[in-house]
Length: 209
Image (cartoon, rainbow, N blue to C red; front, top):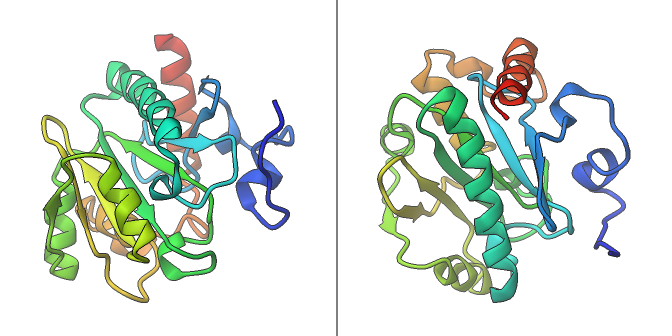
């Protein structure tokens, strides 16, 4: 199947071109998505669900594509939880390429991470975030059509929720996770890879399958 690609996209260039980097290890695969460890894994067990097609965020998906994403997220969550415990899901939803919210990767990727505390609460403490319940995925599509960037979070046992992220702040959700674990200065995946956590993720999930 032909896939949408973008010449200047990190994931299009790296993930689908036989990369040998440990954070590009494919842990699971569906028709439209792959599951890989995240670069800069602040905790072991942190993975990404990455679209095989180049699209900026889940809010930009068509209705028929959202079902496929939800199935891939469910598969990734099951992999993480069987080895690392309850997982939090989250996504940065930029509107345009090149914005701080996009974290330098303007390609749909949903985070799945076994966090011990509430990510939404951490964001509220850091950025005074106001959260809204996400009754249906179509809400993200509506926000995207309106030109509203979002941060979306689903914590164990709870429904999805979203907020308008702080403007001009790179990687706001990663910053919040870094603060949660007591390493606020090490949020940036481009500087701190946390390779031991990535290797542990690959090992544990491989054993659990």
